[in-house]
Length: 202
Image 1 (spheres, one colour):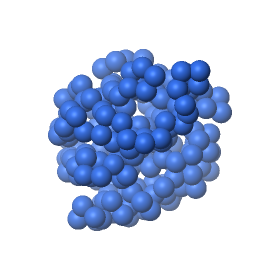
Image 2 (cartoon, rainbow, N blue to C red):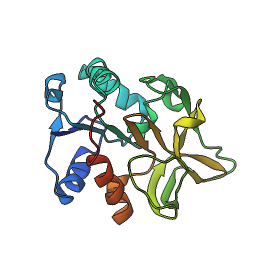
Image 3 (cartoon, rainbow, N blue to C red):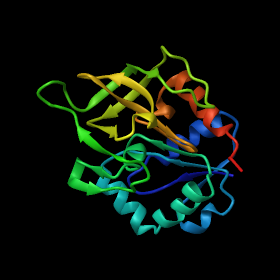
Image 4 (cartoon, helix red, strand yellow):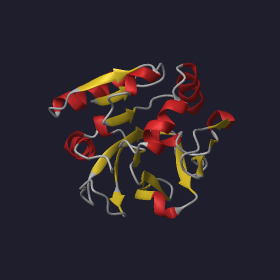
């Protein structure tokens, strides 16, 4: 069963709509026991890093997610803030995050670009993964912060906004997109379908 984490700061209903539009069955996860049958886990993201972390902590989910994702290797997709909190620290609200990936989340230089970045931007996928993507596709972004992975091998894709930044990450069964796949038209739905079609590494 595909499980979409439904927390106060997220946009789980719009992700659920996209998943069902693709013909997949999914259910919301709101507590640790909801993950027992999970084949895929999606963490949507809208709002701040602190609000997201506070919501996950109040639901007692970090430990359960570590067991499912890091130990059992269930395919995981973090979207927007859901990707950012996979790193060790976010400059937004000066908050420690999950720390699954080494690196930090930084704010765009407001002397250089307008924040938030809002709209369509071209994404260049630089790392081969089991999810097929097109190099020249455009995806929809809404973000004032961007992830800076410590290990460049974790960078799945890049984009440009006042300079190159990390637009998507991948490490083993962990995927993340700074852009909103559920709002990115056919390109976003294609990527989401690719993720939902992944099989767990045994």
